[in-house]
Length: 210
Image (cartoon, rainbow, N blue to C red; front, top):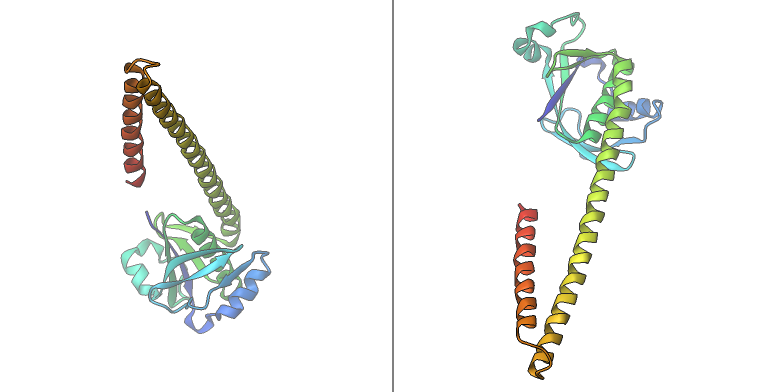
């Protein structure tokens, strides 16, 4: 699911990337545009927040393009002739960066910002409150991913140990059977157990890949 945030601006007052970065520094965030980011790009670019790279789409459009699709947004927009339309998906860092840039646009050129999906207008305070929520969500996702990776690695290690034990027992029982020390049914039972576990492990790997 993608979200679209639009910042209405006066084209004559559009700040440069350097001016936006400088303004963002006053907000206390470690943010920077990467080299290929262009405010007037018709696709987008990437930027960095607290060492985490992200990417989102950005379109520079005329105000009328937005209003024609959503007439209800035509509210106190006489002083604006253009807009930046930011589009992002599930990446919380992208959402945080868009909110940070939007705050800078409000500070530098009195931009008006709206979340198009719900037709909700955002003032500076609302955006500032939302930024740490995006960052916290991303940190939660990272922590969850680390936990899942550790759990998976632990399970893999446990499965390897189990396989080693089963194969060791199988080889030992076969040797003992060949010496007529034990009956044939013990290694047969272990062989069946090894085969069943191999099938289960194979199915798990297929499920994980999908």
